[in-house]
Image 1 (tube, rainbow, N blue to C red):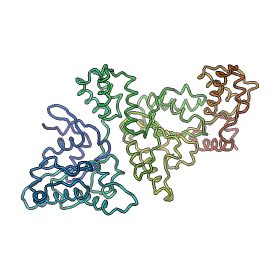
Image 2 (cartoon, rainbow, N blue to C red):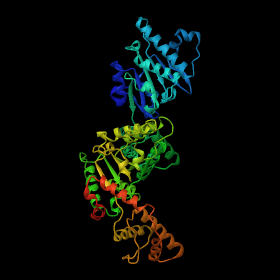
Image 3 (tube, rainbow, N blue to C red):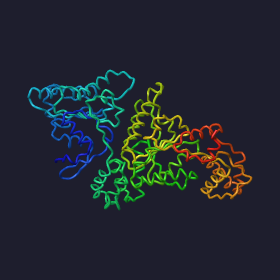
Image 4 (spheres, one colour):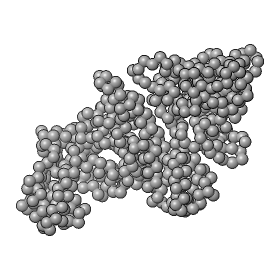
Length: 552
């Protein structure tokens, strides 16, 4: 079985170029390392795990392949006879399981092979692979562990020692997140860090074509249109595709268009282990009360997006306004208008050292794999971190800030990922994160200012509960500065009162408003409105009555 170089994925071509040019012999493979990969062969296309790909596609001519992981210890995957010729193995053939002895044994064998080559006594091509390398040499910031540091230095020797230069020696360290691996290993300038991406739409299409015979029932209408299914599932792994088809084939339930949307959401959320959540775009900007100038501006952006003119598409939006003004609701309406999903980043912070950064790496990998989408971060003032933290959190907030800032400003994301930050305290978000190139449009949202506006908001929400309010609000004490959140709460109480007491709707409304008290103190509401005014990127977004009332 042989493989064509032109069929290799880009990350594999990069590995080949770095090795053959003698620029690198050690590779840290990170990212989507637990997935299944297509093995492009001259006699067809099959698939296998990453280790299979490395051994069969990139190292088919290597004489000895050594594998190590914590669970199985050291093992010889290929070239057992040659390995036994090494004198220490003739004395003691037992292979170690513990990390330090195993890595030391591999290091000694690599030195032995390099010595043989230098003495012209034969050349042995050796590949050493360490699975879950972050468990073998983990990053433990602030902890002095001599054993771990010594082990990390041995890994560093594999990559940096001049003794190994020009030798047929390759080492591969597999870890999902770079931030989980010991910094002595990661920060070595002689090591090549290779990011394994999620499968592309084309990869998924090839995999679906290969699966047609086995999963003809599950694929249903997509049997003849694998490209449509691949496009709809972009962002999932090959493993996720396998699981979906296996379950559907077993249940004898063919996939349809709606299934694809829902199953993609379920699979991606499961694989991200609760770090993200898909918000289905079920509303449009027509469902947004008021804000006509804002809606006009957003629709202009969407028109450019839909025709592929991306030069003027904002890299990101900042939605700011008092608590309860409907910032999340606006995001849902915007996504529905665009016809794309919203990926909401949830609480990625973790109490374990290094886990927060690893969670962010995982989230960013998913975002890069998805097709067009909005990336929503609620309570952004708390989530995005600070440039300077005074050491109060061991620098975690600063590291989060740096990772977010770098990802939000990637120029290749324009027109693919649109960042949306929401906050009632935009003043607490670092200024550099709000600059153009990361956040190009700052959108303020305000509560109602007049009794008429408040009553119209209540009337529109009443229709959701199949209630009809009178055209006029005489004798009704409509609250000042009413937010959609507060209005929703009022209408829930009105509905409950109507259902339980059979009271007329207007009587129930009057009763609910008589004793109403806002959950947000007036001074807090005023302060958050003023912050939203200060942050806006276009004064046209500010209603005239808001300007008049808060001009002073």
